[in-house]
Length: 72
Image 1 (spheres, helix red, strand yellow):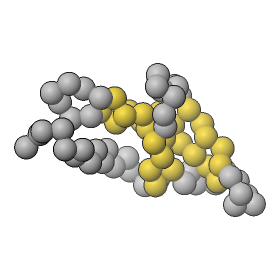
Image 2 (cartoon, one colour; image 1 turned 60 degrees about the horizontal axis):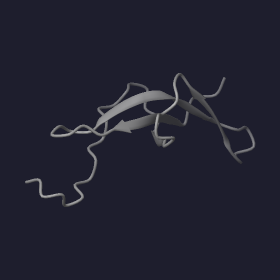
Image 3 (cartoon, rainbow, N blue to C red; image 1 turned 45 degrees about the horizontal axis):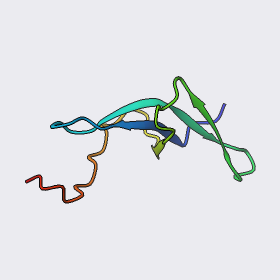
Image 4 (cartoon, helix red, strand yellow; image 1 turned 90 degrees about the horizontal axis):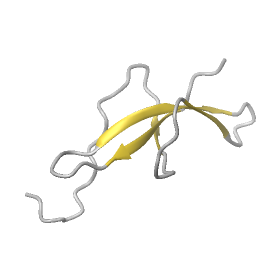
């Protein structure tokens, strides 16, 4: 089996705390390079998936960019 190309996450917004990135699965490239199979262990409630480049060890989830909501 091919090595996964991406990890699939859902980002859970939390009031007064940093967003929580929950790992839901992985994405494998098709042999012809024209697409991916995505294998999920769960589905995101909001229907949005975030794909991040796969690394052998799960990395610390990335920080969501500050959207200027008055946080300092």
